[in-house]
Structure formats: structure tokens, C-alpha cells
Image (cartoon, rainbow, N blue to C red; front, side, top):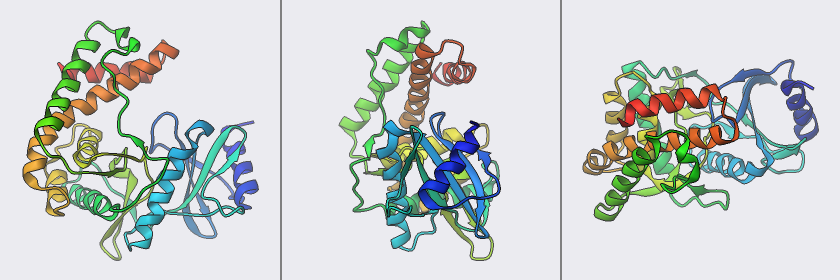
Length: 288
């Protein structure tokens, strides 16, 4: 059975919704499958992860509910027939999210970057006091991991970035909180009618230094200049500008190290994974 047919069966069993079609969208990691759909005239996202990642998915949708209660524009989770935020079907865990109105932000647009940074800062501020057992550590990098032998340069580069991060956390007092995990521009919608920007869906929600999320956003912007993104985030005051200036260069480098680490882990399981090799090539250039 095709993936979308399985997802439709999950919607029918978990929520009694059967939309006409599901359109694939790419918002998360390779383990997260997302579809867009219209249900009762409103835009929704269907998010699917392997069942072993159920708690991480629950943490993300629960975080969205927390923000909604605080008046932050957000993709609100739709509870299933059982009252739960997540339903299981055929070895996967599913969540259904009602999208906030508006259009996705464009990573390369300077004005959109300001909205992007502002929305990320308000998201971080709005997560104060949130806790969930599904919130995991913000990275899994270990410089002694066996999979770092996949390329001769990799262990040294990852180890150097890890050491720099360790020095930063020892010498500087960083602001910690709940991280989005993958705050790419398309994960945020701007509503032209209100001028408000809301987060559509979450990545791998975790706890860690807030500037790590900003570093992820800067790296996910690709080749676009990101001065406006950083300025928009700093203007919210969620993290002091001095901390951003001190931590961002280190965390930008570590973000690439973490991406390289994840790609190497995938390659140990599937040596012909073209996407993982592409990520590793880009990381080699960034970490050179």
C-alpha cells in the first residue's frame, strides 16, 4: 500500500477524517514524513514518524498546544477520537495539525527573514515553563562514535567543533530552553491580514541553548544572507545580543558537525544513501 494510502487509513481510524488527497511536503528530517491537506475547508498537516519516535512527536505537538494557550500563532494539534494528540497505525505514529493562516516564509527574502527571526524569538519566549517527557537532548554527537570513521577527515572536524562547544558552555552562561529543532523558513507562516507569523509545525523538540535553534535557522537558510534573520531574533530580547554574538559562530560550526554526524550514522546503515553523501560533502566544505 502506498504511503499516502496508509496515512489516509490512519486519519480515518484515528480522527475519522478522510481528505480527498494528501500532498507531500518536506519540513522535517528524513525520519519525518509530512503531508498537506484540506479538511473541512482548513489547511492541515499530517505528520508521521516511526513509532519509536512517538514521544518526540508528542512533545512537539504538546509544545504547539502550550504556545496556542499563550496566544502565539501556531499550528494547533487536533486531538484524535481517543482524546490523544498522537495515534498509532501500522508501525507509525501520526499527528494532525491545523495550520495557521498565511503563506510560508521565504528564506531568501530579507523582510521575511525579519519575520522569521522574530517568530523564532517569540516561540522561545513562549515556551517558558513547558515540560514534557518526550523532550530529548538537543544533539547526539559523540566524538568517539564508530561511524565517524566513514571519512578520514570527519572525526577530527567533529571533535574540533565538539571541543569548541564544550569550551563555550564552560566559559559562557548560555540561555537554555525548549528548542524547535528544525526551524526552517517554511515551518513559519505569515498572515498578511494580521501581520502575525506563526509556527506551522515542530522539528525534533528538545532542550538546549536557545542560540542552537538560531544557528540551525541560519544554516537552513542556505546561501541566503542571514543578517536580517539574526537581527529579527535579537530584537525580541529573548537572548541578549552579547550572548548571540559570542555563541552563534561556535554553534553554527557545531550545527554542521551534528549534520555530518547524522549523515555518517545513516551511511553506516545504508552506504549508498545519496542524500547523506550530499550532506557530508557540504559539511566537509563548511568545516574545512
